[in-house]
Length: 271
Length: 271
Image (tube, rainbow over all chains, first blue to last red; front, side):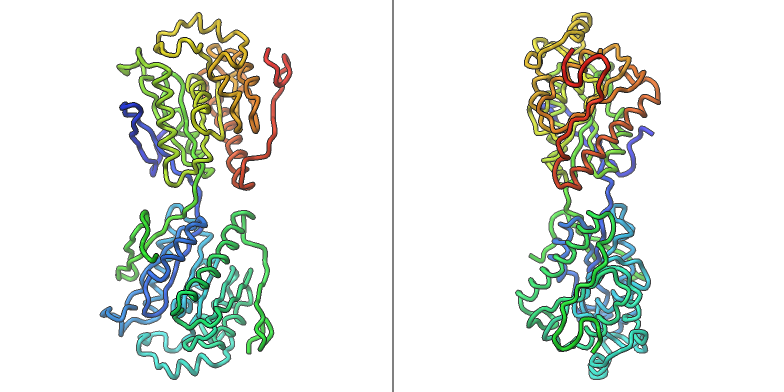
């Protein structure tokens, strides 16, 4: 009973030149965990600043590099969605197995290709918060084809179409997702066009809350600093509401849907 | 901006035998700090279990050994209150300088001789929560006399007397203490008799809250397990109210005085 527990830190400290012995026992409160998934060709650095801001809210954050994404990587031509999905699952396991992380409060923040895979992860692991910026879509049947070999014209046509939720693995996962979702659209995105966002928005039929925001004038890569900052601001505001709200209420924030209606269509009807 | 901050942890982890690189960014929330001060002749072990329970509330806890307290210590015959006061201050500095400790939320939990010194510490360092079990009293004028050489008969007479707050350094410190105080009396204490507790209770005239409890039938050393457990239970209940209350309200718990009136005298009048 009266033993020093594993993880306690034995400290020696000085009082007037006399060395004293002590034991530091760390606070045993578990923090939410948030994993950050970059887009195709990117790396973890793009999420360092955002991860630090969300860590300041009291979360344990994990950024990481998906395999084969860097163009100089020898696997760049052969890596598939299956490979990178396994990477995201491995990162999830690392984060959720940390002793000070609350396994029941894991969030995933992701962009583009990473956001598409993160949506699928919600069907494989418990995810409480899901933030998707410019989430991409890919055909299920090309799952094992290396990412770099997907035909871009065919993909572009697929992304302009209106999809029913069951016909796409990522959208089907979103349909069953019961946590809190954030969708951030880039207004001038020529990689992930508006119909993709509409398909995602329509798919989230079981969520606890949905927040939809548009980055005015932004391109897919957020090539201007002001768009980067606007995304950070949206993400951190949303995370503050979710994480601090969950801490204050002792549970998830109350169910509510906050949609920013688009003038072309109703708030929750796909085009 | 996009650099890994000091304290971030570079992690390597495995996905299907492929090693991935990641960065863990720890939650940047500060915890209250609680220091535990044992009584004369004791050591830090007597507080290990209690410190672990209070760490479970989200506090960084520090137990430590006061110099010269163990009878086998070469300084046992020469150590003074001044020495041990410096030890407690050094422990305070160690704890409050930890990067994840909230310097404005430091508590001190102490027993007997340690409780007497802890009361004095509140006049030298900011203390938010002060828990005194069987706090002892000593004459100011003997301050530099080694603890082990104090005359026990003279001390016993002093402890039976009713003292005005200004005439004792510990009581004077209590009078200016504006945080939350807990006093735990041992009902059958033949070292720290009831008038000492009465003097302490009367001294706390500026507190935010005062909680007074009696360990029924207990002796000074809590020589029976059930008394040890009863003390732990009182201490942890009080710490829960203080720490969780401060977290929920974003500040100190609301001002209130909870006195368990003794049949012999009014709740706040010294005998």
